[in-house]
Length: 435
Image (cartoon, rainbow, N blue to C red; front, top):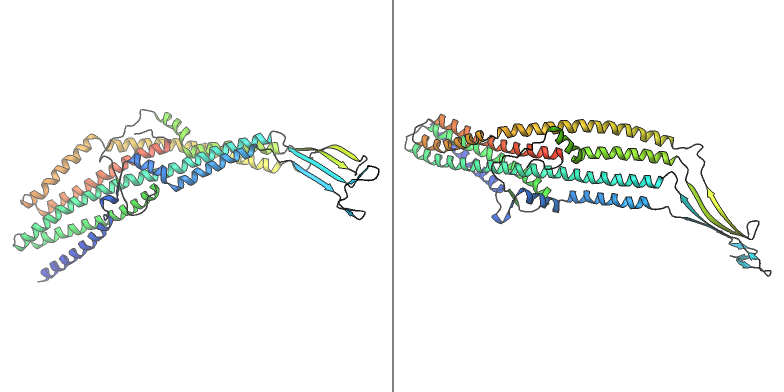
C-alpha cells in the first residue's frame, strides 16, 4: 500500500514537473519560423559591422581626432589693439583737424601676430597625428572585443542548439519507453521500481533541458545586442556540426611578428610611447619663448602727430623654463617604455599559449575521435531495442543512456572549444590567420 501511494505521488510530481518544464522550454522555442534568423558567420559579422552602436560611437572618436589635426595646423589669430579718446574739451569722440589742419584727438591702432618658435606648431601637428593613430587603434580594439563576443556567443548558441537536439531525441526515446513500461507495469510484467527509474530519468533530463534553455536565453540576448537586433527573434547559427581548422605552417616567431603589427593592445602601447616622446620634444620647445610682432600707428600721442612703429614682444625665460612639465613627461616616457616591454612579453606568451591550445584541441578532434562518436551513436540506437527485448538489464540501459548523453555533450563542448581556440589565436594575432 505504501509503495502504491509512493508511486502515485511520484507519478503526480513527474507530471507536474513535466508540464512546468515543458512550459519553460516552450517559451524558449516559442518563435515561429518567420522569427528565426538563420545566419552564417560571415553574415553575422556583416550585420555586426552595420548595426553595432558601440562600434559606431568609437568610429566618431576617430573622426574627432582627425579634425584636431586640422586645428593644430592653424595659425594663431592676430590681435587688434586700439585706443581712442572718448571725451576732450567738452566734446565726445573728437576726431578730425583743427583750423590749422592739425589732427585732433588720439587714435592708437596696433595689430600683433604670435609667432611660435622652435617648431612648436609642427610638433603639435605630430602629436595630433599620433593621437589619430591612437584613436584608430582604440576603435580597432573595440571592434576586436565586440567581434570576439559575437563569435563566442555565435558558437555557444550553436553548441546549445546541439544540446537541444540531443535532449529532444533522448526525451522522445524516453517517452516511448515510458509508455511501453506503463503498459508492461499494468500487465504485471515488470517491477514498479523499473517504471519509477524511467520516470526519474525523465525528470533528470527535464532539469538538464531547463538549464540549457536558460543558457540559450542568455546567449541569445547577448548575441542580439552585439548584432543590433531587438524583438521576437531567434538567431540560428548555420554551420557544419564538425570542422577541422587549417592551422598555418608559420612558426611562432612569424606569428609573433604578425601580432606586433596587428594586435590592437600592443599597437596602442607603441603609439602611446610615440605620443609621449613627441610630447617631450614639444615640452622642450615650449621652454623657448614665442615672439609677438606687429605694426602700430599712434596719432597725437607721440613725438610726431602720426607715428608708425613696429612692436616686438618676447618673454624672458628667467623663472619659468617649463622644467616641471619636461621632467614629468620624461617620467611618462620611461613608464611607457616599461609598459611596451611588458606588452611585448605578454604578446609573445599569449601567441604561444593560443597556438598550443589550438594544436591540442585540434588533436582531440582528430578523425579517430570522429569515427568513435559515429560508432557510439550507432550503438545507442540499438540500446532501447535491446532493453525492450530484455537483452540487457535496466541498469545496463541506464548506464548506456547516461554515458551516451555525456559523451555527446562532451563532443559538442569539444567542438566549441576547438572553434573558440581558433578564434582566440586569430584574436591575439589580430588577423584571421586560421580559417
